Length: 491
Image (tube, rainbow, N blue to C red):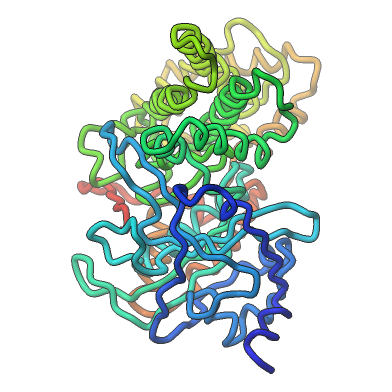
């Protein structure tokens, strides 16, 4: 059997709509072949949903495709151009180590980008080597799949392949390539790039493409670009609220790391909060706390304002009117975010209806959690099963009074207590990808070549609302440490 026939049997069904856009938007090139392609992990269920043959992907030919040594039939690899504000500073960027193979059309007719991350140098690599190392690629696999299981829009991970080549960072580390699946890789930074270096026609072409791909319900009327802005704002408000509700910290919310589809994208120094504190920062490079947990909604609004700026020429021929339209749209973000967050918090506390004092009740709980450094996930988990004695707050007079108010609040609902606790079970995860558990899995994989720890962790994380006693150890918070947990971009 030839390699081409094997790849045909894999089920690749590519279309390449992005490659039909103006060449300003990308550079066509193939991945740089690697020494020894080896499949490390494959997401079987995701592969099947994409219409791919799992066994073919696990073959020698499949590993070569996932490592960039063979191009699947119908693929048209390219590196996308984009710019972005990184920690507030605007710069030219682009796919410096990633290549879009093409857009897979699954059996349901849905379109997904298939991207190889770590596939070698591109015209946008600047001084980088275009490669990736195994730890950060496995981290993205773990966290993105956990986010998917939590019901949070996200890019997903199809596979991680080893390259058999060392990559030099602080030390010599094994190279790896992640296959990422996304609704698209259109970013705020994509519009910033075209706005800065393209023509007015290029900008309209990109906007129309984005509308067709992600918002086909928006008609081709004269207000379609305003509707585009409004829909992107709406999706980001929903997404950031979901992050906050589970204690997720992205870590590097640059404008190039915000996808217009509303998916979480570019997992680098991401992590989940243990003890509740809005000032929590894990990223080693975020020394000023710009992207701290509590700042994420504000940063999202700032980023969206940068997106709105790129659309001004399309919103209205009169600049002053265009600015007003953009400002009015952006001003809605805070209200939309707050609505989503408050609804989510009510669900986490078993509230079906709305009362004026709900927000005070919620803020009082969070304030106590911060004061006593209570574990965010486990506090809500304890309340879910009506076991307040398992929280760090138990025994304090403030918490005792709060419990009385909360229970009285639930008593005023038409729904029985059992329904409230069922709502809480479906809103409060039993386990998240705890930082110490993720590090444990990565250490076993990197240092011993043992992937069983990661596989068990992935299995548990795939059912975060199961609340099964047999996996109770995954609820355990990390032991106290004098050294703060730090994450790195993994570039």
